Length: 397
Image (tube, rainbow, N blue to C red):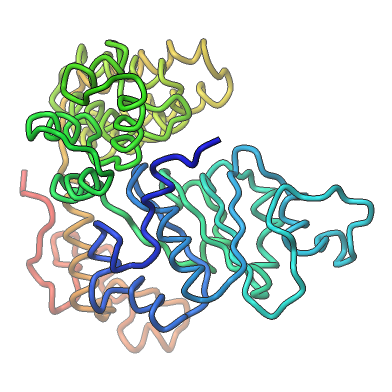
């Protein structure tokens, strides 16, 4: 079987890599780590087709590591044991194991890099199994995910890894990658492909390869034919959800329940994790509705619980109920804006002294020093630290 085009043109150095200049540009963190051969575990979080696998390979090559690639969808503990030479059962060699369909394990002093695609699909037990090997340095773990790792990766593992956020590729980056394929496209065909792929380089390359195999010429018409007329840009495994979830949230924010319901239907039909949708609804209830209708948080939490308890397809009704409620609810972002402003003040001023009159006074000495002196006697007084006297995060009623 011939090697896929995406693999044939894959960059092998950072100088050949396109996009993500905030990570791989001169003086940027991944560039420095690669150039200095700094060995550490990290997570690459971002949309599909933005270079996560390529960056992992380039990094592993730069530190002269043994490179192993697994998908969390199909991999398990036994695959990890084989990479580690059978370790993982009380530190003993696993006996009678089958030969792995992985690179031959080698006893050497070279670092072992495991690139775990879709790390968010590893359950807690599987992630717990990885933890001691990452902690000891026996395994350098590079996780790739389209999901927020704060929600999907256990805290113990996350604390031992650095997170790099990848951005959707810009049009100029996509154009350069399309040029590298060697196909001669008219400007209008190239622009159509860029807009269709929407920042996903792998999708654009695959489209070109498939079209070239089906037709003698690559133009807008043949590209559209390759798409088979009906194409929803949303992977059935939930990989490409950024645009649709954004449209879903913005439709609810604009109080457009019909649009919100459409985008909800697209996510459900495409296999999105219903808990991901419900989680976003809980956040939305406080962030965008907030004090205007406090019961919105109660409803959103009830939807999340129903999704956990019932599951698809029935929980589609709970999601629809919650979506309509949240979209129609009045909106108020004041509590969200207030905590944002307060966090900015904390970062700017640090730990300012709490006014004496509202400090805790559990002992007589502390009372004599003025701790809690006016507690409850000055409800109209300013309870902010001295440096922030008069500071308000909410508008006066």
